[in-house]
Length: 221
Length: 332
Image (cartoon, chains in turn yellow, blue):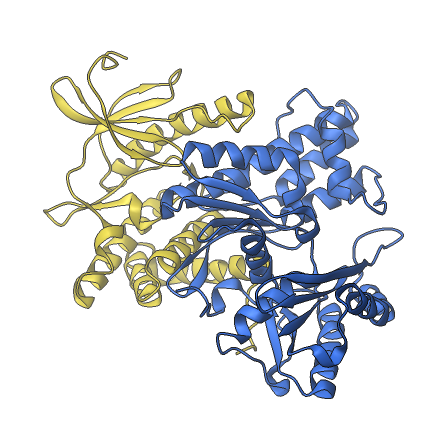
């Protein structure tokens, strides 16, 4: 990679990859690098890193075609499992969602729902829908990032699990307004997918949740 | 002041006694061992009823206490197998009524976390709780233990147990099925391709179980290699999710608890992850890793001293009681 000599600054050390800011062709860019994990078997580790690097780049590109804002991809290097992509200026939705007004929060959640709907409509499963993977730009545009756990699937199961994860993320991070937020996500989602498909997927979410080990039974308080 | 705790969520019937300061004075148990197959809930419950008196008296003799010395009785109210839970609950209710002392219903999963914290001195950890019935990553946040990731289908211990039975292993006293798989896995060298399924913060183990079983039955792979590969894949998944929770919460302690915590390979993976995030790693001591009464007794103390008790008419068992439904008043 020709940027390897540019100075890079660690932006965030995630569990899965490290994000750096650096320059590439005189642009400020993000270098996402999936570092080897010492705890994993070397062969499995490589498989996971290569697979996720390739798929992430593909899905980011496809999401854009579906009308979902994502960072531009500049360069992909499999051997070092890294991607150079556009630096998105803005704020993580995670950081602001609990501190803004109800109207604003609901508006953002609905918008998120629309974006997820657009992805699912073309069979893109994000795989890690949390509010830390959504960036709000000053223009009001929401950009989805981190497709590293994504996949292509037309199955209701996959879409249900994807939305279930969104719900779980809201519950663990924005527990005060989780229900309201998720309801708005669904409102936005059904605008794209239509009431009928949305209902099928909501039923699937229910089923996914019941499948989980310990879910309160219907009749219990 | 003493609390007696009764554990009977699954195959173990356990009785523990804890002081209000957290000294464990007794921790006795007796496990139901099916001749073949997994736990039959009704058979396990019958076992618990049969051994209850003996396990209780062992706990009293270990501690040197008499029933009249007790201040409270705690029991695992859920989650777990209905008939087993009801057996423990019935005994707990009877004791509390007879001794006219308060009854405290405890969430079994929280008891696993709390005994881990008590025994390792972890204060505010990301906890990976892995057992035959549960597999989850939790951390305390705003009044409750929040679940950051969990299995979408079967538990990690369940995955290892079923695999072990599928390949013809039988549990022996002192060597649980999971440990038998671990022994074989240490002799494995070749990593076989198996499904690796992490979905966001959750993971799925049922496909891995099927694939590992099929790989063995095909006969083209060595059993040791299949065990090894099963462990590598399954543990990498839960470890990855644990790491994501550590990164997400920024907590500086990692606690491994539950029956599968005894596995050395899983421990080494989490130790490496903790190091990588400048976090302190601790693992619950073996005798408190599997289901036990001591953890229930200690969590009973924490609950009762913070205003929680369970009136008899609200002491029905909760088979699917989730961790994040429980208020945790003892953490401030």
